[in-house]
Image (cartoon, rainbow, N blue to C red; front, top):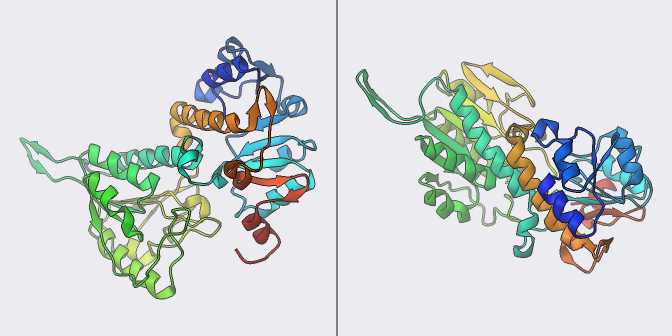
Length: 365
């Protein structure tokens, strides 16, 4: 849910009128009654809600049907992924919608409370480790039993951003021996602080991180070295969890079909990059498959498996953003504020984010 009753109550107390689509919170265990007790009203359906609202919060990117109902000058806040969805951006501009994308919020200290990406990535990393533990036909921890000693599972995590670090921490709590790799040497201390081994690689690249803290796309030679390193560690692992993404581009393929073929039978891969094509060559986004005796998960929505806490975190992120956008109960779109300016994708019929405009219009990024 984009908004939970606790946050709705605070908004109502601040002078904002809150409306929630009927039944929208049921599967996250937030009933309509809880919203009405918080002072919100219940809309009969989504069309009714869009017709009566000045600003709409979305937990997901709006569907084409929703886009066709948005009236001029309405404000929406949603994870638009605008670099990968130019058609959505064009539709929003054509309908003169003011659209803020939560994945475009600048990653600066002042915006930490608004950081939807980190909130959702943390949940995905946790759920990925549990998915792996349930699928692996072995225990994660070391066990000494009357039947002998059972060695701990070996987990290899690729990518040490928020999702990767949470996957490391959860796997360690479950008792696994964990290694992690990232092209950014700066994350080494974070990996080690969680009790994992950081796998270092000589990629021959001076700069591997962009100004937003994301890994940069590597050169062909550096990527070849990366594949060789990944293959060598994956062959020794029981579980591989991949989290590598490049904003606006297809996820890099880091686990080739040959690497999967060389892995131990019964091993598990959890590919968190499925929505952007996957880090494993044999992943099928949204499916679980078995190839060469290796179970490959490529889930598209692990976050929703933790619906209660995912909703709490997302709602609080939204509340922090709304504090910037709403003053004394009224919308106040102050584009002098860096967070508001950078997160805004379309406004008054124009694509106002420069990087997104370049992608939509076919120019360089």
